[in-house]
Image 1 (cartoon, rainbow, N blue to C red):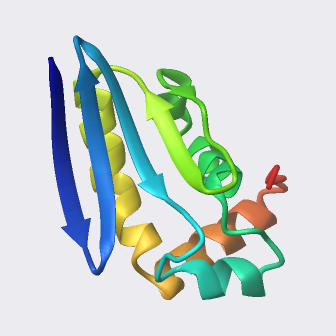
Image 2 (image 1 turned 45 degrees about the vertical axis):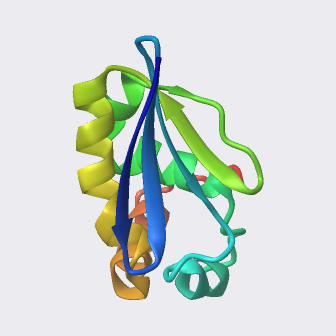
Length: 116
């Protein structure tokens, strides 16, 4: 059985999929409201960037997830509660240039290196 839960905020759709108990969270990249700030900081606004940002911003949560991102999509697999927590945490960043810019500045100041 396939169950799909969608959350759309400011023209961004984050989807949590449930394929017979295997849960994943996905969203398409490259046309997000936050992309301008990502590019201005010298990064590619792709799935790998958002994976790195997740690992920096929420390391405990990221440690419980498996990632399978690609250039055009962010993808994480894990427990439903963890994916819901990630959705709630990441929505404000992908929809706001200011919020993602602040997070990139924090990561840069901490010496974090994105693999985008």
